[in-house]
Structures are given as C-alpha cells and as structure tokens.
Picture 1 (cartoon, helix red, strand yellow):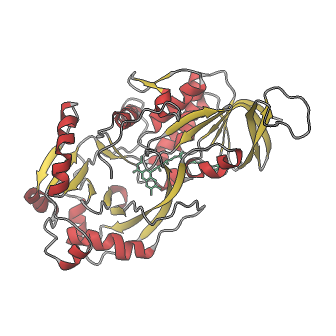
Picture 2: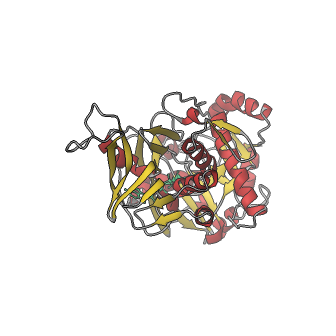
Picture 3: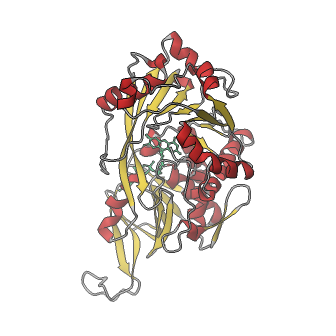
Length: 428
Ligand SMILES: Cc1cc2nc3c(=O)[nH]c(=O)nc-3n(C[C@H](O)[C@H](O)[C@H](O)COP(=O)(O)OP(=O)(O)OC[C@H]3O[C@@H](n4cnc5c(N)ncnc54)[C@H](O)[C@@H]3O)c2cc1C
C-alpha cells in the first residue's frame, strides 16, 4: 500500500494552493493530491465568477484577500504568468438609508488607507443610464426595491481567469515534485489506533485513534496527515467520522446575457470608471443582484445569492432555474437598467457555495491527524493564496503563517477552538 507524508483531498483552488505551499515548506515530503474529477479545478472553482475586491471592513477578510491579490499581481506582472487580471473595480449602489448606515464604516476604512470614490445619483444616471428613482413605480414598490442615492467605486478590485490560476498552482506543485491522481474518489477514511493492539475491528472508543489515510475507488492510500479541501462536499465526507465542519452547500446561479443590442454594448463599454474602459462590477442596492462585465465574451453575468427559503443541499450537478432569472433577477435588473429590457440569457450555470454557517469565513483546523480547510463561503478564489499558506503552515506545525508580502497570520484565528474573526460590515 502506498504511504505518503500527506494526502490532499480535492484539487480545487484551495487544495492546489495548499498542496503547493505544503511542498514548498516541506520539500522532502511525499505529498499527493487526489480528486474524483478528471482534471484540476472542475468542482465549484470552475463555477466561480472569479471576482475579487481588496475592500473589507473586517481585518481578517482584508488580510486574506489583499495578500492573495498582491500575490496574483506578482505572478502576472513579475513571473509573467497571464492570469488575465482585469481591474474593473466594484461599483456598489446604496439607498440613502443604507448609505447613512455605512458612512461611519467607510470613514474608518478610509482612515485605514482603503481607497474608494463616491458617485452621486446624477453622475450614476448620466454615466450608466441607470434609473436611480424607481420607487414611484408600483411594481418596483411591490418588489421592495429602493432608490439609488450613492455609488461607492472600489478601484482595487476586479476579476481574473480562474482556470489560469488553477493551472499555475498545479504546475508549481508538480515542479516541486508533488504527485496528483485524478479520477480518484475518496469513499472513506482509514482510522487506526495510535497504538495498535491487534484486536478485531479496532480502534475502540478507549483507544487513542487517528486518521491514517483514505479508501478510494482505486484502493487504500496511507499518509501521516490527511488534508481535506473538498469545498461543498465537506460534511458528506466528514460527518461519517464525526468531524463537524460547520460547512453547508448552497446553490448559486449565474446567467449570461450577451451585450448584443446597441444599448447593452454601450453599457458594457462604459468609459471613465477604470482602465479597462468598461462598466465596473455592479452591485444593485436591494436586493443585491450583481452584474459582472464578462469582457472576453462580450456579455454580462447576472447573479443573486438568495437565502431563506433556499435549501442547504448537496447536488453533484446543480442546475440553474429559468424562473429564478425570469421572475427574479431580470425583473430587478430591468427596473434599474432599462437597457436589459427583453434580454434573455444565452447560457447559465449553477454551482455551490461552501458556507461556513458560523461566520462565513474560512475554517482551518486539525483533528486526529486530519487537517480541514474549507467554508470559503463564496470568496475562496480571492482568498486562496492566503488560505493555502495558512494550511501549509499548520501542516508544518507552525503557529504563524507568512502571507505574501511578509505579514504574519496566527493560524488559530481561523481554527475552531480559539477562533478570532472580525465580523464583516461590507457584505454582498
Ligand atoms: C456561482 C459562484 C460564484 C462564485 N463567485 C466567486 C467570486 O466571484 N469570487 C470568489 O473569490 N469566489 C467565488 N465563488 C466561490 C469559489 O468558487 C469557491 O470559494 C472556491 O472555488 C472553493 O474552492 P475549493 O477548492 O474549496 O472547492 P472546489 O473547487 O469545489 O474543490 C473541491 C474538490 O474536491 C473534490 N472532491 C469532493 N469530494 C471528493 C471525494 N470524495 N474524493 C475526491 N475528491 C473529492 C471535488 O471534485 C472538487 O474538485 C463562487 C462560487 C460559485 C458557486
């Protein structure tokens, strides 16, 4: 039976960045990544909108994202790997009430050196053709829409090509001598006593036991440490051995609308906000439907992260729902942006967020030689470099991880027992 220093389960963005930094910190260790799919990044990483913003109130979020984005920038600009970073910026729309609530937070963020620009109602209407006053409309009132009062533009934000990022981490891991086995599904864990006594079916509850590897469709693989980075599949895999991850899967859907009409094309290529010469990533005030400018395909990606009564449900192939667009997203978008009138989507897809139901921040902890990393809650791409470094530092038995740029991060802040998370006040 093959025996490794570590097995990393999951070749999504989190598993790959983790495996890369583990191998970097422990070059002599034999480390294998396994995934049930036939290539890297085919799980929910492939379903991402791949947006990022370095603008958070929570210092936990800010440290994780900002250092990751700085690393992506370094990879593209100094190492010459094209991650197709687009600095579109985020344009966040607020009603008067919600702007007044957030004003104090913005002042604090400004004092911390975070940059943003404010746009008033008229400028937004002129630049984007946005209808800022919607509440005189009976339908809009029925739908609980609100008038737009201000827009906050965040320049250090944009998108990247997630497949290029996946390939980057995969290639770097392989270059260091890492091994990968695709088409390998973990069915269960090998659990052994630390001190085997040869009793039938051990370990028993009075024995000290540990995870010693995995049973896969291709046989058993043993390892000193098993690192679980399976995103939305966390509780499916870990519930059977009594490890609580607090992670639940929830469906998220993206509808792609081509900028075919003259009005939509003009909106997509709105000038004056960013160096891309395009509309920024736009977040409507309420409900917070978001619209990504997908420049390569001359289209818009429309999405909304609905909560109650959306089920927490694990699906292997979640499907987008036609009515979610037709009677949901479309109806809202068209009230603010009449350019979308009559627009149907040309394609759509759905994936799963792995939601950490405690505080929606990543969770990284170790139990009985099993390391868990997950609960990325819809921002796993933008945090992935920091997450990978933190998991690797835990694996290397350190207390602190060094994030890109040299900042230290205390690993237990993302753990369960001594968790220390600063809550976020800027949530989409
Ligand atoms: C619609 C949508 C939009 C999003 N937009 C953004 C965004 O704009 N910005 C952002 O930062 N994040 C975004 N996210 C979130 C982001 O995609 C995730 O946080 C990230 O991809 C999680 O990566 P992961 O490696 O944890 O999970 P995954 O990519 O799902 O990887 C887990 C891997 O584990 C494997 N696996 C599972 N079970 C087993 C098993 N038993 N045996 C072997 N392998 C197994 C799977 O095959 C999979 O490859 C979005 C997500 C969705 C769904």
